[in-house]
Length: 235
Ligand code: ATP
Image (spheres, rainbow, N blue to C red):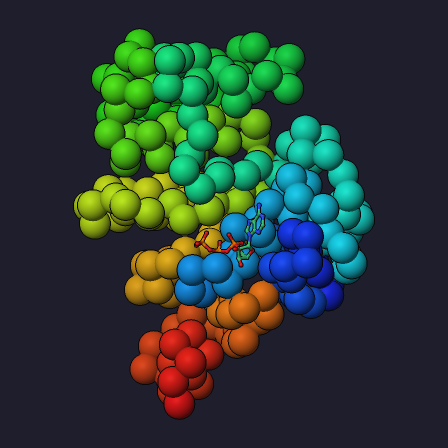
């Protein structure tokens, strides 16, 4: 579904990604883990068309999407939930959710999708008319995922969905990601929470200083010395 080949991204003369190749298959959950500054956010931003690639290619469903605008990519089925969530604090939960559907014309279907999001995250139903800046961090993360779902993505890009959240909330978020996968939504997740990433993802890539240091089935990573070497730089 997603095919990245030899992707290079630089900020001025800082090379953030130095030749990344990565695949995500339909209905897979794939994680990218790596320390601070490894280039994880840059990878998602490059896929979503927010930052430009210097070289390399990104294909989504067999079509080259390198260099396309983020708005165009949303309509082709690709939604990013950015780090820090970027919800609109002065707007209500309801308004934030509707903003996720601005590219759609099928009003009745949108209402149904909002209902599905509220069924997935019942706390948002309780908070529906409240301003988003009154929500807890976990509720804001749920809202951000819900808003992304309103665009009906086939591929969801999640940047550090567990950041700063209590373990119980993180478990709920990942439960939702699995439920979405069962409905056919593929997910590429960037995580610093290694344990959570490995338990949630079918396959995992380790990103280190802008290159893929290791990749494989998540189940094969735990207790693997090569993984410790790739992630922590220890042999
Ligand atoms: P974190 O988890 O801290 O967000 P990350 O793995 O997501 O880390 P990136 O944010 O992608 O890493 O950053 C990769 C590299 O690019 C780092 O060296 C970072 O300092 C640099 N970088 C990121 N954004 C910019 C920017 N807007 N301008 C200049 N350099 C940047």
